[in-house]
Image 1 (tube, rainbow, N blue to C red):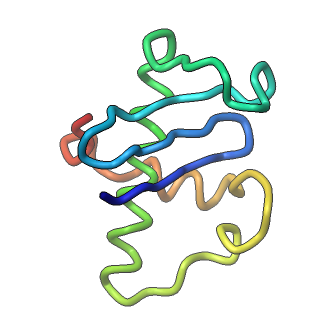
Image 2 (image 1 turned 30 degrees about the vertical axis):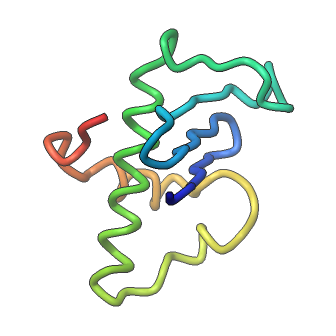
Length: 93
């Protein structure tokens, strides 16, 4: 099993491995991640998933992660625009 978490400071998408469906949490309203909100906000989950795939593709090509990812906190607008540019066809949840 592979576990992974993607966050932008407001939302967190948790991949639970092969046997568990992904979970989405809204951190300002549930900082302890006790309330799943995937059904209410599938578009947010899709966006985080797309951005995660873009990062993995960038790293697979041997590129270094942008400095914005190495710092704590939300992504910069420039990196956010680059990530969102990934084709939606690659984002299947």
